Image (cartoon, rainbow, N blue to C red; front, side, top):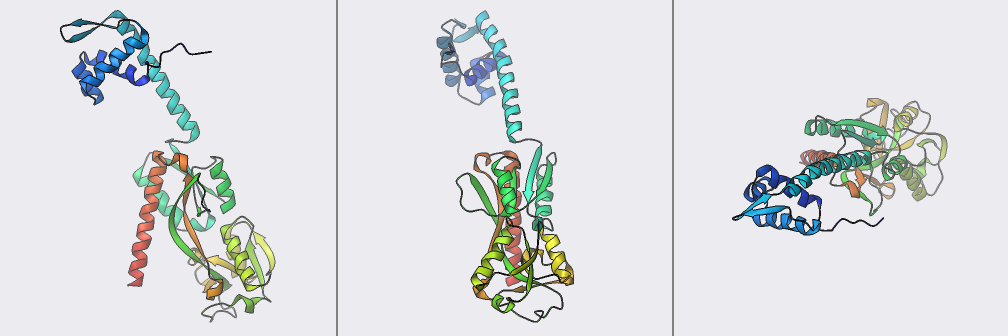
Length: 312
């Protein structure tokens, strides 16, 4: 059905009408809305043109609302309230500025990075309820694309026009061995010299798994993987128990204390993961995600400062 409403009738002009009726004058309406008197007068005159009927009489330079203006103002209040409620409900369903923020995270970031960010968000927005959803990089990326989570702390994905990412830090990949292993005194590991060893790894889809595969591709052999697991802490348990060696990111170095040793790889095998927060670009102005982004930038700054202090 074709709309019979004139393009001259807009929500903004109805808001001007309400402000005029409540303030009682052009000056009061202009002050309430933070616009000029001329803009108020123009909007009210435009409403008359759009309705094709007179809304105001004149007494000197003053506009006097007629009964038609009062009827329109009463209806306008209801319409604007209903539209405001509808917009709020729509944004809530889409996850925009809701009271709940669902953040995805890699398991390996739950030791310090994720808790630090969640704590900072709570300080910024005490009323906001946060939920942490754990998964692999591939799993989190899928959830992000389908609006099942609001943002993800993970390895920064390849350039994508639909996803915005803020890098937090770069993390190097290390050779992981139980304490006291034959490699304990090595300053750097040549993977080709470890071709006869047994290995454990993460399942496909984890960022660390792809680093694992790439490193052994460079070494020129397929490792003998005796077991695959779906979280990095189980993987570390297997290594510390002596079931096999693996490759791990430096961020988990302190999780198992002295039970596990992370040894640098030789330069030809070295690689880094860039860890960051990612969210859909269409939601970059969402107040909750702005708070998350601010927390992440604060964390990045603190890591840069800490790194500079260590270098000094």
